[in-house]
Image (tube, rainbow, N blue to C red; front, side):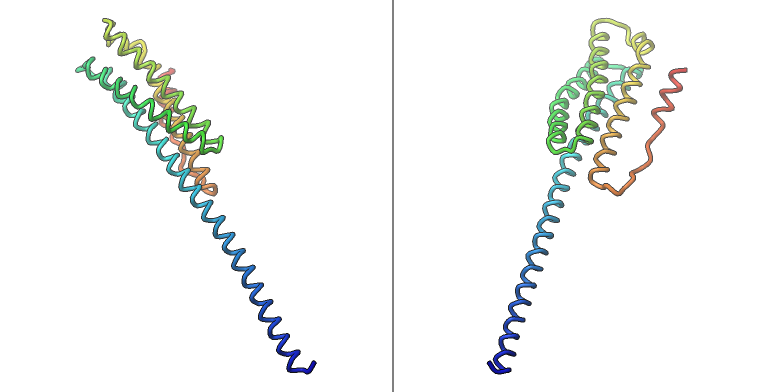
Length: 196
């Protein structure tokens, strides 16, 4: 073989090697990009599930808070209280579905927090349900509030803290490097004042 043939073969070999290296690089880049796309889609799905759950919890909490507040007002209306109680009942299904979606989506950390928030909220709603039944049955609203308000405020506080804890767990999953906002201590101080 003469030098021109060897040079041509070396050029062809170099071209093939360059093409092979380029193809491997492109495939590796596509694989990394594909993995990044899957991670991005997973984060988007989790964000939607977490958002739906925190919204459902917040809506039900706000309805419970409005019902609890109505017991302390002078112009308390039992029919309005029953209407709010019906709203709380219909919101229970939405909360259950949203918490279930978080449990399925995972991981365990926010799932347990979502379940805890729903349980605290349900305990509070149960107390309010009992209050509505007691007042509808003839018990004095003023006496009920005087004897039970502390427990209702404690339920409200525990529910708020459980929802905040769920939101923080979601933020840790969605933004692992972020510390998150400082915890609110106002509810804890109010509870301590009530205990004195």
